[in-house]
Length: 370
Image (cartoon, rainbow, N blue to C red; front, side):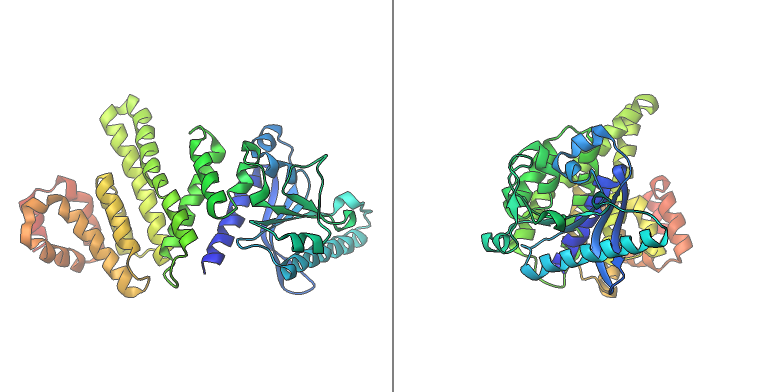
């Protein structure tokens, strides 16, 4: 299951990085049989600045291309399967060209880039994959010219800024180092912002996957990404501060923090439990007002729950309890009863009460909850 999570991350990541340069088709079918190409990129726009920012990944995207990223080291059969899909696409393009009476040349066909974290020497030798040192950096092995294919061995790429956006798709220490380099980039770098959002989503998916124990490597990756959550909150505070220069510093800072926490909570619950029901939605805004430290604890507590109906019900109870716990000193031992009464309200009445909560006194709240 975690392999599928990483595969989805790789596809979404490549789509985000390459979309300014052309059309990115994730999961394109080939017609010879129902098989799927991971990422089919059609080059449309030449944006020198974006290509330069993407470094090596930008060089791979200067023409129509097929990207096949692998979480585990690519196998012989997987390489054969990738090449077979490339041939299927070439045949499909030729049929379309004949139908439209268009003449194609060799450069009209896509190139295949197989992205693998590592590759054995025997595999590379078996496909006669050779480096092109005069034109390309180490770690890139080209098959025969007419095959229009290459294997990118990510752990062999130089540890330079030019390769960062491909090393993000590596694994183990290579990926962890790339994440650290990503964090160190300037905070106004748009590629950094987009990549961090995708990495946070990857972390949420890995934490939410309870079908099997988390591998040691994935656990280390989660720990690497975890500090990004606090960075998101800090970024929200800074954004709120900028807005607050016009609206009042304290008000703007708090508003930015709350909006970011609401977005994080909504995405986290959606990844874990699927579509949110009206009860969960009602608690998004109230919980977003909880201080950052307590908010993080809530997410960790929910991440330990099962992903079935019982887990969803317990998650709602935790949200309700933490909203009312902001006045823990006032409620004391009556908190469990108040939580039960709150959740027993019709959704419309509960939503209205939560909206009015900041303005209600303790006595008024207790009265409303029976």
